[in-house]
Each structure stands twice: as structure tokens, then as C-alpha cells.
Image 1: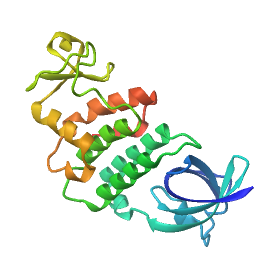
Image 2: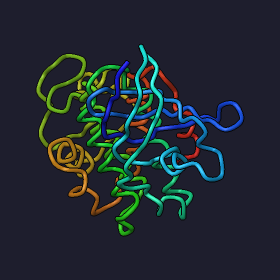
Image 3: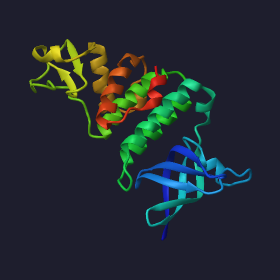
Image 4: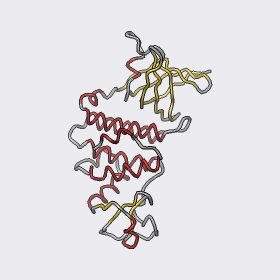
Length: 240
């Protein structure tokens, strides 16, 4: 038995018994943590603010074997603006659902944690950019973090270098772009501007790549990431 202190983001919750909740928390050190928030649904519970979706803070957990119980939390942000705009709320829910599907208990998830935190800040406090484009960029960087970076420079089938200037087609099943000889197997045409944007998103911070709308790529990257996770994310049906 021990006490664990970790920064975390609440990915989802489920009401349990009369007054409790089960929380799924993404921790940079411990990956996915399922923790019981006992009594949090009581009117005067000090744990209620920490037992909501998207809550970010420092969680103190009591650990007994492989079971965690939330004892306290120092809140850093609740990303409240998301609750004022249903579409941004849906986009954020999709991002957390991807993390819940990709994170593993007991395995470090520092890059995933940082990516999700940055994505939630952008959706909450950057009102001048298209939320679906933010999620599209998030999908591409999430694939990179998970080890599923798509092939961008060589054909996903024959491994020959891709021609400069295109045309490009993306094959979801093969995991990247195809050359002219293999293009018949691909299903997603991508413009030169979109291809260049994808290359920039992988290399640079999310916040620098959202000056225009590239939401047309969302469905392509959604299919690509979810096929690698082998998990359909239900909330994606509400997007775009």
C-alpha cells in the first residue's frame, strides 16, 4: 500500500453506486489509471470538482495492489470554456477518447499527455481557429506519438521515393502515400498544400499549424488512426 502523486487529466468517468465515480486518468508517469472517487457525488464533497471530464491537476491517489482511490487533487484547469460550445466539447471528447484507447496502465505516456494537454488548451482558449482542423492536426501527431507515423517520403507499397510536386494519394491500409505506379491502391487524393501541411504538423508544434482550415483531411486521418488502434471511437460519428 502506498500513496501516489501524479499530474493527470480525467479522460472519462462513470457513476458508481449511489455517491461514487470511477475515473480514468491519463498520467505522464503511469499511463492510464482507473481510480475510485469515493463519495464525490455528495453535495459537499471536496472531490467533486476533480471528478469531472477534462480536469487537469495534481492527483493524490491511495494505491492498494492494482487499485487506486482518489484522496485529493490540486486543480490546475477544468477547461470550462469547452462546456460553452458543444462542437468544441465534442472535439475535445474525441481527443480524450483516443487517449483512453491508446494509453496502457503502468506505461509512461509523457508525449501523449503533453499532446492532449496542448490540444485541450488550444480548443479552450484559441477561438480564432477551426476546431476540426485542430483535431485533424492532433490525429496526425497522435499517430506519431503512438508509433504510427504515416510514410510521407516513400511509397507505402514499393518504398520508392515519392515524386516532388505530386500527385499524392494516401492509402489508409498501407499506412502512407503511394507513388504513381501504386496509386491505384490508394483512395484518398491529397493536394500539394495539404501534403506540405501534414509534413509541417509532424515536425512543429500544433499551435503553429492552424492558420487555415485543413479539416478535409479529418476523415482520412480518423480512419487511419482508428484502424491502427483497432478501436472505433463512437464520438467521432458526431464529427465533422
